[in-house]
Image (cartoon, rainbow, N blue to C red; front, top):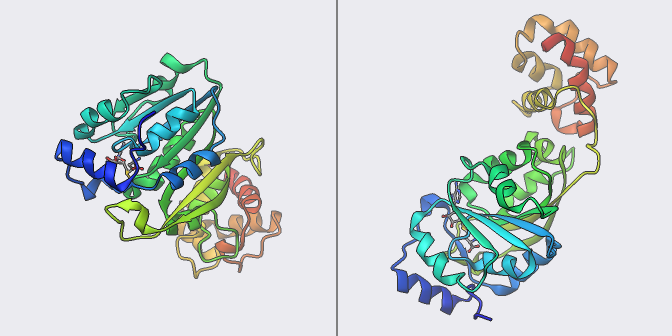
Amino acid sequence: MHKDIATPVRTQEILKKYGFSFKKSLGQNFLIDPNILRNIVSYADLTEDSVAIEVGPGIGALTEHLARSAGQVVSFEIDQRLLPVLEDTLSSYDNVKIVHSDILKADVAKELNEEFAKFKDIMVVANLPYYVTTPILLKLLMEKLPIRGMVVMMQKEVADRISARPGTKAYGSLSIAIQYYMKAEVVMTVPKTVFMPQPNVDSAVIRLTRHAEPPVHVIDEEFLFEVSRGSFAQRRKTILNNLQSQLPDGKAKKEQILAALATCSIDPTRRGETLSIIEFGQLADALYPTFR
Ligand code: SAM
């Protein structure tokens, strides 16, 4: 077996061999600590039956750990300069497929189904490019792929928002969009020193686990997210004021909004940040006939 890619010495060797220079605009901060990688992979509970989807393999630091634990790895990398590097660093693994694509434009389901339909377990495991964390997570969740969960490194502040509970400052529409589909826990906070180059922000690993049943059944998921986004538009405003200003023609429909809030026993003077996902779900359904 090879020496781990993710040691400072080996990473430097690889960068030098290929004359690679980091692109800040692509969120390129590579991991150089094998212990962190082992921990990330252990949280994913991978087996021979698993396909691990990775976003941004870089020079393959996490990819090789995934290849040792999963049946198959499919990694999406946007930076063409990394393709020859990965071909070299991962040459001893025959269960890794590198897809040269922007993950936001990729047809992930097609990549999986064409070759890997026999794998019944799908996990997303990645050290994400921080500049696109939220769009990547939302894309993978909304695509309705049968993903069991995700173990992903991101900026700590975003991890806190994703996993936030009602009544906290970090709780918002992102918490609701993610927690509607998945249970969210921060499982590790990670120091800047384990990256090359070191990022400017603190990092954390979040584990998302799909609910067997969503916490609330709603008529229209899109509308639930519209209502929750609207409710947090101005955090200091009441839910009534936010909904009036954010829903189409909301000012003129104050009575209907008040009636919907009453149906759900939600005091119109509460702020959005105090509502649970279940309450948002009930409210979205009560508002639905008026606004859809
Ligand atoms: N996995 C490697 C590691 O842990 O050392 C690299 C992680 S680095 C934080 C993020 C990686 O994502 C980089 O390799 C970068 O080129 C890639 N990347 C950035 N934007 C991307 C996108 N939209 N789609 C796919 N890959 C992307």
